[in-house]
Structure formats: structure tokens, C-alpha cells
Image 1 (tube, helix red, strand yellow):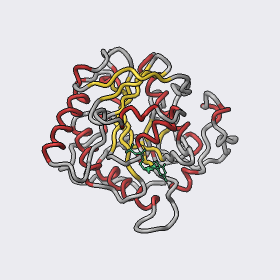
Image 2 (cartoon, helix red, strand yellow):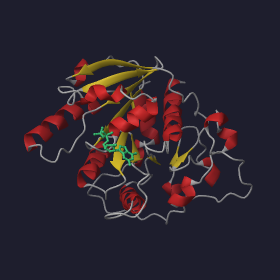
Image 3 (cartoon, protein in one colour):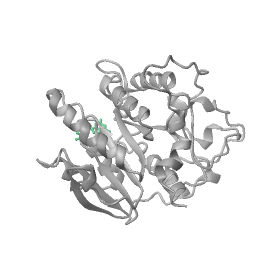
Image 4 (cartoon, helix red, strand yellow):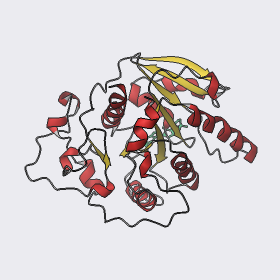
Length: 304
Ligand code: GDP
């Protein structure tokens, strides 16, 4: 059956009607960013321990976490107690039994499409990657696929407003979508983007999740919140991917960890069950393997 329907029961039922609903009060999070950053992956659930150098032995008396702030991945028993070592480091994602085969072995550019209906036919799982321009999208794609020029296609003149499909391991698609929020773009240009990209979201039954990139080095931006709200209202599964998380040192304005906390508050206030989120840095490689593992569990669940 279509992917969207399957994953909807996992993720989308958790969305509240946004943004008008009054905030839902949840218990305080027991997850601190420091805890998550140093949090090991559960070795017994790690399908490929060699890839996860952060995964020491499970602590015998690991802290039990508040499920109100966690994303329970497919196959995780909702009744099970979740301890720190079951959560992917730097995220709220509980590792489940479908994780595996996360490695990217080959990537092939397939096509650029000007309209949703020109995209490759709906025959493989897709992960769409979306965010404000300058959020670090190209850097993240390059870091994920470990190639310097894969994402550059979308930066060539004339391709910036296209939907770009990349086939990974001959089995699933990475879909690079146009960035949004050009400061100087006239309203008409924004509307054009909206119709174009929204058309893609609303027509793809094979869309596993949107990776919504959010720059952690700046305070939460209205346009990102608007985008998240739109996806939520339209039942499009999403994963918040925080970029530039290496910028933790005090500088001008708020630090990345404070910005993240503010964004977390938005998630807590607006979602009955939180969507998955994960911290990344293309500079240090933070979150790279964890994001790929998260994607693998959603994909394998669909593929079964
Ligand atoms: P795009 O417009 O979303 O594709 O963004 P780019 O990938 O081109 O990145 C925009 C700017 O942010 C560039 O100057 C990058 O070097 C920088 N950048 C991207 N990712 C990171 C990151 O993880 N950490 C830091 N410190 N800078 C980053």
C-alpha cells in the first residue's frame, strides 16, 4: 500500500491543527542537548556497530526518558520503556528494529523537473530535502553522499527552481527541492515557489518524509515555522534537521543550543506527539550516520 498512508499513522496523526490550536502542555523534557550529544546508540539494536563509533556498551541503569518528547520509530513497542541508550545521539529518535542498510554506495542524478507531474514515476521511496536558502542544504547533501558536487546541480543557473531527483543505491530517491525565503524575492516569486513545491508534496504517494532543514545558528525564523505548519496541516510527514550545530560557541546573538531550545519549544507547543528531529553539522559530520540510520528505518518499514 502507499507509503504515505502507512507512515501517516506513525507521524501525521500526531500533528495538531496548526497554528490555531492552543498550546498543549507536556511534561518537561528529560532530554538535554548535552545528554543527547553524548548519548550512545543501543548496541543491541545497532545493525552495523562499526559505523557507530559513538556506541559504547549500554549503561546498566540508563535513565528512562519521557516519551512525550520522543519519536517512536516504526516497530518500537509503544509500551516499552525508553532509555537514553535507545535514542539516536543528538536526536529524539528511538532506534527501532527496521534500522539497517543505511550506507550510501552510489548516487546518480536522474532528472530535473519543472512541474510535479514531470517527476520520475512513483515507484520508489523518496526523501525530499527542503529549507531556506543558505540553510546548508547543499553542504548537507554533499556530506550525506560524501561527494563534493552532487548537490551542485541544483545551484546551476536555471536549476534553482527545479525539483532534482537523485537515485541512491538504485533503490530510493533523494529529492532536492528549491530553497525558500529569498529575502528579496517579490511576493509573486514566493507564491510561484509555493504552488510548485506544494504541488510536489501533495502529489507524491511515495514521499517517506520531508527533511525540513532549520539553521541552528540563528533564532527560529517565521518562514520555517510557517513551512512546518503547512506540512503539518497537509499531513506531510517531516523530520526537522537542525543544521550548523557546530556553531555552539558564544558569539553574536543566541548560541545554537539556545536557538534549538526555542525551536523545541515550538515543537512541544504545537505537536501532540513530536515529529523526529536531529542535530547535524556538515563541518564536523555530527548527525550524519544517525540521519542516514533514521532514514533507513522509515524506508525499510515501507519496503517490507
Ligand atoms: P544552501 O543554500 O542551503 O545550499 O546552503 P550551503 O550548503 O551553500 O551553505 C550556506 C553557507 O553555510 C555556506 O557558507 C556554508 O559553508 C555554510 N554551512 C553549511 N553547512 C554548515 C555547517 O554545518 N556548519 C557551518 N559552520 N557552516 C555551514
